[in-house]
Length: 342
Ligand SMILES: Cc1cc2nc3c(=O)[nH]c(=O)nc-3n(C[C@H](O)[C@H](O)[C@H](O)COP(=O)(O)OP(=O)(O)OC[C@H]3O[C@@H](n4cnc5c(N)ncnc54)[C@H](O)[C@@H]3O)c2cc1C
Image 1 (spheres, protein in one colour):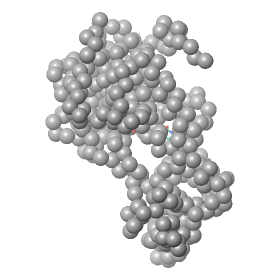
Image 2 (tube, helix red, strand yellow; image 1 turned 45 degrees about the vertical axis):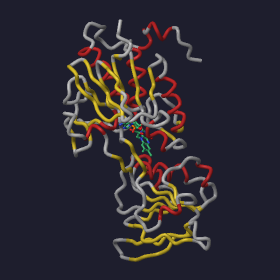
Image 3 (tube, rainbow, N blue to C red; image 1 turned 90 degrees about the vertical axis):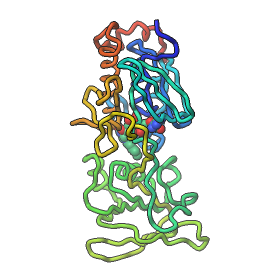
Image 4 (cartoon, rainbow, N blue to C red; image 1 turned 90 degrees about the horizontal axis):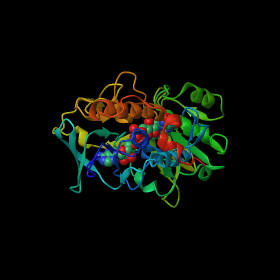
């Protein structure tokens, strides 16, 4: 029996990694508490509810929102304690098997192990630095896409050269009236198949191009065109548009694991250095998902699932050694036999 105030595991962060760890730890019969700063679970999936996700094994291509809802549903299978709107600011090690997880509002959560699943951290889409850009955010300047339909039959310009910008371009290419993609170089950081699809489409790609100026319409509250510059030829030109979608990465607030008080090894003063088994430099504290770094780390949902299973199994073996050590398969799990899947 466990002391009801001390959980076997406290998971910090309710994105794909934390949600899957919550399910898997429940399957391994561990008591779980999951703490999330935002008002709802789902992590970065909130940034792409209508983007199709193709690369989760066994799942047909489906929108981010569906993946998010299914992950949240699955995470609650073993009824973990979920605490929302709570920002974790520190972890205190009391001994190798007891940690105090401390929240900004002064809460203390005791736990035999901790899994840090804080992903990109407390993140916001990176904004355009162009003068007065913020004044168009209520009209036709977008940093994420909530409804693809909003862009139907419109002339749209996407800025960016990473996976997200390329995925959005592919999602929108058949429904927009005209679609342009502008990127500061000609090197795109995207999956090859998505890039091929884009290059074979009628999307106008402007490589080595950056935004110089936003040109307002008559009412001054919408962008009517952008002035862009080709940095190779040094020529500038205008592109008229109905909507501008900017996908140039994310900015994050400093998070608790970067503070001096916590003895965690970091890479680039941000990522938590760890192992492929989710160990960190602090015994009893594990890291999973986008926040951990090790050779071969995959910063995708599939990679988050892999880390989550390893962290939970490691906790089971080293922090709770008296209990079943080996991995078990869900098809043999007694608790799951009684759960309805329909
Ligand atoms: C636009 C876009 C498209 C993508 N497309 C795909 C795709 O098609 N396929 C794919 O596999 N992956 C895709 N990804 C990547 C995928 O979303 C991430 O790999 C995944 O979200 C990582 O999950 P995570 O749980 O590690 O982190 P996150 O999703 O970042 O979740 C971390 C959670 O921790 C919370 N948190 C942070 N700090 C604290 C704190 N101090 N206290 C409490 N809570 C905290 C955050 O609020 C957040 O909810 C995409 C990402 C983006 C941005």
